[in-house]
Length: 253
Image (cartoon, rainbow, N blue to C red; front, side, top):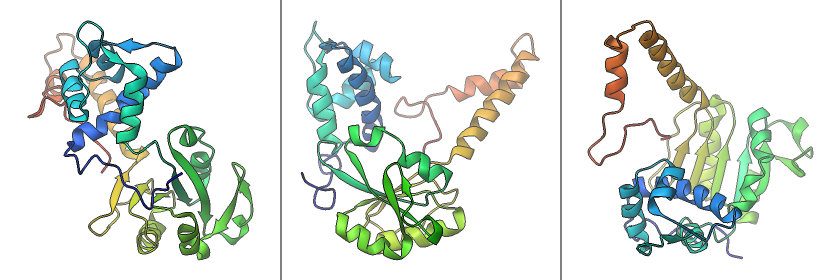
Protein backbone atom coordinates (compact mmCIF):
# COMPACT_ATOMS: atom_id res chain seq x y z
CA UNK A 1 0.00 0.00 0.00
CA UNK A 2 1.31 3.44 -0.89
CA UNK A 3 2.46 5.79 1.85
CA UNK A 4 1.84 9.49 2.22
CA UNK A 5 5.46 10.32 1.41
CA UNK A 6 5.03 9.55 -2.29
CA UNK A 7 1.38 10.51 -2.85
CA UNK A 8 -0.52 13.75 -2.27
CA UNK A 9 -4.28 14.37 -2.43
CA UNK A 10 -5.51 15.59 -5.81
CA UNK A 11 -7.80 18.33 -4.51
CA UNK A 12 -5.58 21.32 -5.16
CA UNK A 13 -4.45 20.26 -8.62
CA UNK A 14 -8.09 19.81 -9.62
CA UNK A 15 -8.99 23.30 -8.45
CA UNK A 16 -11.41 22.36 -5.68
CA UNK A 17 -11.93 25.37 -3.37
CA UNK A 18 -10.59 25.10 0.16
CA UNK A 19 -14.08 25.74 1.57
CA UNK A 20 -15.33 22.70 -0.33
CA UNK A 21 -12.38 20.59 0.85
CA UNK A 22 -13.23 21.56 4.44
CA UNK A 23 -16.80 20.26 3.98
CA UNK A 24 -15.87 16.95 2.35
CA UNK A 25 -15.13 15.25 5.72
CA UNK A 26 -18.59 16.34 6.92
CA UNK A 27 -20.21 14.68 3.92
CA UNK A 28 -18.06 11.58 4.37
CA UNK A 29 -19.05 11.24 8.02
CA UNK A 30 -22.75 11.51 7.16
CA UNK A 31 -22.41 9.09 4.25
CA UNK A 32 -20.49 6.57 6.36
CA UNK A 33 -23.32 6.58 8.90
CA UNK A 34 -25.81 5.93 6.09
CA UNK A 35 -23.64 3.14 4.69
CA UNK A 36 -23.47 1.47 8.10
CA UNK A 37 -27.29 1.44 8.10
CA UNK A 38 -27.30 -0.09 4.58
CA UNK A 39 -29.02 2.95 3.05
CA UNK A 40 -28.43 2.65 -0.73
CA UNK A 41 -29.25 6.19 -1.91
CA UNK A 42 -29.73 9.63 -0.38
CA UNK A 43 -31.19 12.89 -1.67
CA UNK A 44 -29.18 16.10 -1.61
CA UNK A 45 -31.62 17.56 0.93
CA UNK A 46 -31.27 14.60 3.30
CA UNK A 47 -27.49 14.50 3.02
CA UNK A 48 -27.18 18.27 3.41
CA UNK A 49 -29.27 18.16 6.58
CA UNK A 50 -27.14 15.34 7.99
CA UNK A 51 -23.94 17.26 7.21
CA UNK A 52 -25.25 20.60 8.49
CA UNK A 53 -25.10 22.54 5.19
CA UNK A 54 -27.69 23.71 2.68
CA UNK A 55 -28.52 21.51 -0.29
CA UNK A 56 -27.51 24.08 -2.92
CA UNK A 57 -24.01 24.28 -1.43
CA UNK A 58 -23.79 20.48 -1.30
CA UNK A 59 -24.75 20.13 -4.97
CA UNK A 60 -22.16 22.75 -5.91
CA UNK A 61 -19.49 20.99 -3.84
CA UNK A 62 -20.26 17.66 -5.49
CA UNK A 63 -20.09 19.23 -8.93
CA UNK A 64 -16.36 19.79 -8.32
CA UNK A 65 -16.07 16.03 -7.87
CA UNK A 66 -17.99 15.36 -11.08
CA UNK A 67 -20.85 13.80 -9.15
CA UNK A 68 -24.33 15.10 -9.93
CA UNK A 69 -26.66 12.40 -8.66
CA UNK A 70 -29.76 11.11 -10.43
CA UNK A 71 -32.98 13.12 -10.52
CA UNK A 72 -35.68 11.38 -8.51
CA UNK A 73 -33.18 8.91 -7.06
CA UNK A 74 -30.42 10.94 -5.42
CA UNK A 75 -26.83 9.95 -4.81
CA UNK A 76 -25.44 6.44 -4.54
CA UNK A 77 -24.12 6.27 -0.97
CA UNK A 78 -21.37 3.68 -1.47
CA UNK A 79 -20.06 5.37 -4.59
CA UNK A 80 -19.94 8.77 -2.86
CA UNK A 81 -18.10 7.25 0.12
CA UNK A 82 -15.48 5.91 -2.27
CA UNK A 83 -15.35 9.08 -4.36
CA UNK A 84 -14.87 11.44 -1.41
CA UNK A 85 -12.43 9.07 0.32
CA UNK A 86 -10.35 8.97 -2.86
CA UNK A 87 -10.44 12.75 -3.24
CA UNK A 88 -9.32 13.23 0.37
CA UNK A 89 -6.53 10.70 -0.08
CA UNK A 90 -8.03 8.22 2.36
CA UNK A 91 -7.80 5.20 0.09
CA UNK A 92 -4.09 4.97 0.88
CA UNK A 93 -2.10 4.53 4.07
CA UNK A 94 -0.98 7.74 5.83
CA UNK A 95 1.60 7.05 8.55
CA UNK A 96 1.38 9.62 11.35
CA UNK A 97 3.69 10.45 14.25
CA UNK A 98 2.40 11.99 17.47
CA UNK A 99 4.93 14.09 19.37
CA UNK A 100 4.18 14.79 23.02
CA UNK A 101 2.64 11.88 24.88
CA UNK A 102 1.08 13.63 27.84
CA UNK A 103 -2.61 13.34 28.63
CA UNK A 104 -3.69 14.77 25.26
CA UNK A 105 -1.12 12.86 23.22
CA UNK A 106 -2.06 9.61 24.95
CA UNK A 107 -5.73 10.28 24.29
CA UNK A 108 -4.98 10.83 20.60
CA UNK A 109 -2.93 7.63 20.49
CA UNK A 110 -5.89 5.72 21.94
CA UNK A 111 -8.36 7.19 19.45
CA UNK A 112 -9.75 4.28 17.46
CA UNK A 113 -10.91 6.31 14.47
CA UNK A 114 -7.53 6.78 12.80
CA UNK A 115 -7.23 3.34 11.24
CA UNK A 116 -10.75 3.34 9.80
CA UNK A 117 -10.15 6.72 8.16
CA UNK A 118 -6.90 6.02 6.32
CA UNK A 119 -4.37 6.94 9.03
CA UNK A 120 -1.88 4.73 10.86
CA UNK A 121 -0.10 5.86 14.01
CA UNK A 122 3.44 4.91 13.05
CA UNK A 123 5.17 6.21 16.18
CA UNK A 124 4.68 7.98 19.50
CA UNK A 125 7.48 10.34 20.50
CA UNK A 126 8.22 12.16 23.75
CA UNK A 127 11.13 14.14 25.22
CA UNK A 128 10.88 12.52 28.65
CA UNK A 129 13.48 9.70 28.93
CA UNK A 130 11.26 8.03 31.54
CA UNK A 131 8.58 7.55 28.87
CA UNK A 132 10.86 5.71 26.44
CA UNK A 133 9.73 2.14 25.88
CA UNK A 134 6.45 2.53 27.75
CA UNK A 135 3.50 1.26 25.69
CA UNK A 136 0.62 3.63 24.99
CA UNK A 137 -2.26 2.17 22.98
CA UNK A 138 0.00 -0.81 22.36
CA UNK A 139 2.77 1.32 20.81
CA UNK A 140 6.07 1.83 22.65
CA UNK A 141 6.97 5.50 23.13
CA UNK A 142 10.25 6.56 21.53
CA UNK A 143 12.53 9.44 22.52
CA UNK A 144 12.69 12.67 20.52
CA UNK A 145 16.41 12.05 19.88
CA UNK A 146 15.29 9.49 17.30
CA UNK A 147 12.63 11.68 15.66
CA UNK A 148 14.38 12.18 12.32
CA UNK A 149 15.23 8.50 11.94
CA UNK A 150 11.67 7.48 12.84
CA UNK A 151 10.24 9.79 10.18
CA UNK A 152 12.63 8.46 7.54
CA UNK A 153 12.06 4.81 8.43
CA UNK A 154 8.27 5.14 8.31
CA UNK A 155 7.93 7.53 5.37
CA UNK A 156 5.97 9.97 7.52
CA UNK A 157 4.57 13.15 5.96
CA UNK A 158 1.97 14.02 8.65
CA UNK A 159 2.96 14.99 12.18
CA UNK A 160 0.78 15.70 15.21
CA UNK A 161 2.16 18.09 17.84
CA UNK A 162 0.69 17.69 21.32
CA UNK A 163 3.56 19.22 23.29
CA UNK A 164 3.52 22.21 25.66
CA UNK A 165 3.52 25.55 23.83
CA UNK A 166 7.17 26.28 24.62
CA UNK A 167 8.41 23.16 22.83
CA UNK A 168 6.07 23.22 19.84
CA UNK A 169 8.07 25.41 17.45
CA UNK A 170 11.27 23.46 17.96
CA UNK A 171 9.42 20.20 17.37
CA UNK A 172 7.78 21.72 14.30
CA UNK A 173 11.16 22.81 12.89
CA UNK A 174 12.57 19.32 13.34
CA UNK A 175 9.53 17.69 11.74
CA UNK A 176 9.75 19.98 8.72
CA UNK A 177 13.51 19.52 8.37
CA UNK A 178 12.97 15.75 8.43
CA UNK A 179 10.47 15.93 5.56
CA UNK A 180 7.06 16.29 7.24
CA UNK A 181 4.86 18.52 5.08
CA UNK A 182 1.57 18.50 7.02
CA UNK A 183 1.17 19.25 10.74
CA UNK A 184 -1.80 19.05 13.07
CA UNK A 185 -1.02 21.36 15.98
CA UNK A 186 -2.70 20.93 19.37
CA UNK A 187 -0.19 23.13 21.19
CA UNK A 188 -1.61 26.55 22.23
CA UNK A 189 0.72 28.55 20.03
CA UNK A 190 1.03 29.71 16.42
CA UNK A 191 3.65 27.84 14.43
CA UNK A 192 5.88 29.37 11.78
CA UNK A 193 6.43 27.09 8.79
CA UNK A 194 7.92 27.52 5.31
CA UNK A 195 5.90 27.54 2.10
CA UNK A 196 4.72 24.10 1.13
CA UNK A 197 3.97 22.99 4.69
CA UNK A 198 0.32 22.85 5.76
CA UNK A 199 -0.66 23.46 9.38
CA UNK A 200 -4.05 22.88 10.95
CA UNK A 201 -4.48 24.21 14.48
CA UNK A 202 -6.84 22.77 17.08
CA UNK A 203 -7.08 24.96 20.18
CA UNK A 204 -9.61 23.59 22.64
CA UNK A 205 -9.39 26.63 24.93
CA UNK A 206 -10.35 28.96 22.07
CA UNK A 207 -13.36 26.83 21.20
CA UNK A 208 -14.47 26.88 24.84
CA UNK A 209 -14.03 30.66 24.98
CA UNK A 210 -16.26 31.04 21.93
CA UNK A 211 -18.91 28.89 23.61
CA UNK A 212 -18.59 31.02 26.75
CA UNK A 213 -19.19 34.12 24.63
CA UNK A 214 -22.43 32.67 23.27
CA UNK A 215 -23.54 31.50 26.71
CA UNK A 216 -23.01 35.00 28.06
CA UNK A 217 -25.05 36.51 25.22
CA UNK A 218 -27.86 33.99 25.73
CA UNK A 219 -27.96 34.83 29.42
CA UNK A 220 -28.18 38.54 28.55
CA UNK A 221 -30.97 37.85 26.07
CA UNK A 222 -33.00 36.00 28.69
CA UNK A 223 -32.66 39.03 30.95
CA UNK A 224 -34.26 41.19 28.19
CA UNK A 225 -37.87 39.93 27.83
CA UNK A 226 -38.65 41.71 24.56
CA UNK A 227 -35.49 40.35 22.94
CA UNK A 228 -34.65 43.80 21.62
CA UNK A 229 -31.57 44.47 23.72
CA UNK A 230 -27.93 44.39 22.57
CA UNK A 231 -27.79 40.63 23.00
CA UNK A 232 -30.57 40.15 20.46
CA UNK A 233 -28.73 42.38 18.00
CA UNK A 234 -25.56 40.38 18.52
CA UNK A 235 -27.45 37.15 17.92
CA UNK A 236 -28.98 38.43 14.70
CA UNK A 237 -25.68 39.77 13.42
CA UNK A 238 -23.96 36.46 14.12
CA UNK A 239 -26.20 34.78 11.53
CA UNK A 240 -25.35 37.21 8.73
CA UNK A 241 -23.96 35.30 5.80
CA UNK A 242 -20.63 35.91 4.16
CA UNK A 243 -20.10 36.69 0.46
CA UNK A 244 -20.48 33.06 -0.65
CA UNK A 245 -23.39 32.27 1.62
CA UNK A 246 -21.32 30.82 4.46
CA UNK A 247 -22.07 31.71 8.03
CA UNK A 248 -18.88 33.27 9.40
CA UNK A 249 -17.21 30.92 11.87
CA UNK A 250 -13.94 30.57 13.70
CA UNK A 251 -12.02 27.81 11.97
CA UNK A 252 -8.67 26.20 12.81
CA UNK A 253 -5.80 28.05 11.21
